[in-house]
Image (cartoon, rainbow, N blue to C red; front, side, top):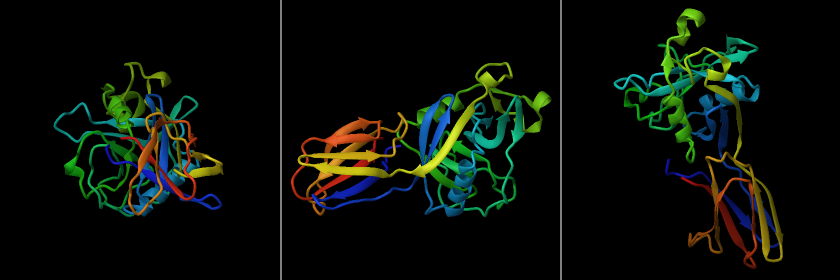
Length: 268
């Protein structure tokens, strides 16, 4: 995804103001960690709904239980949010009431959307990632986020996982179950260990002489951040002063005197 998520901060020697960005869902999976920028403007109920499940850890140790990528002529998605591994059992995630359909954005590659039944206003806990562009789903499913940075590589790795029909031991919901190896074991499930939703925010700004320290919510290694600086925000002349940062902190050792503007931009 080429578009970046950015935060801007205004820094004056005696006054510092920072701005929190939109919410980011931080996925921790067995195939890698990645971040998803949520879109509460396009799909406020979907973001609120998803965030509520994540907040109460409903998605911890959940699985990707469906993949359609083995059918080239079909939609290309990987789906989760339906089942959680509890002890040695796959149990349905308890659901809240269904939410209305918010189908205002297209199902482009790398977007996150709410899954549903054939009824339009039936989405609860389940969601899916579009592994490729899926125009057949446009304006029928609520897209409420997009993968940041190189996180799409993780989505594609999930999509490349072999699919098995596990309905005899598990039931009808598992006819397209991706597994890392043929045996139906915990080690072979495509586990989502956790999902946490929080704002991509600047947590601290300090200025001392010619040094300015910025701290922000650290994202995954698949979402590195660059720092840009300007002394005249009206001119929009941003200078890149650091790239590929994943630790959530940076010290500008050559901070200009007077007013300065900083922004954090996620790398493509």
